[in-house]
Length: 221
Image 1: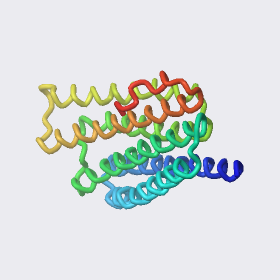
Image 2: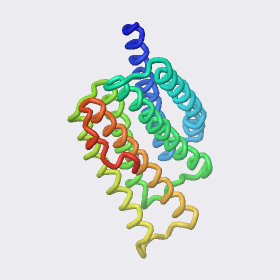
Image 3: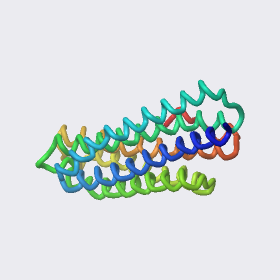
């Protein structure tokens, strides 16, 4: 009976890993589409989000079923509850990648990002890609040093997010109202993407150590 339960717990981990890999692809493709006004790539990101949503539903159903049937305690309960929390964060990361792709589609055939902001968004795309890659590795390894690095690396996205405000509020900014709105929203999408990566890192740290202090302000992300 215990062996079956452990197999089901392992399936929860595999489901999270599968979701995170799809999100990794989604944010990379969404950033590429944004930079090149690539409508086909944007459409693929938007369509692929349905699969991420479906994986979250299946994983959540599995976790709830385990809670109902097994009534787990201690570490087992921590694994299941953490699975539910992390699936929500990963699904939201997929949504944010989809939002980036939707802005690309909305502005096609024009580039959504005006020239003065393109370097900033190239850097944001790279930082988001690294965050997604690190989340995949984190789910594979449960490495506490990597979890701490994810939190530190989020400062990069936060700084870039602030730079977009500095840019659009400067006297030299000549973007249209639509461009200003797009830059503001897109920067927020990337910044929140990083927040959810941090939430997963904190949850992994809690899962490994059992220390509630690792969760920090978990609900922020």
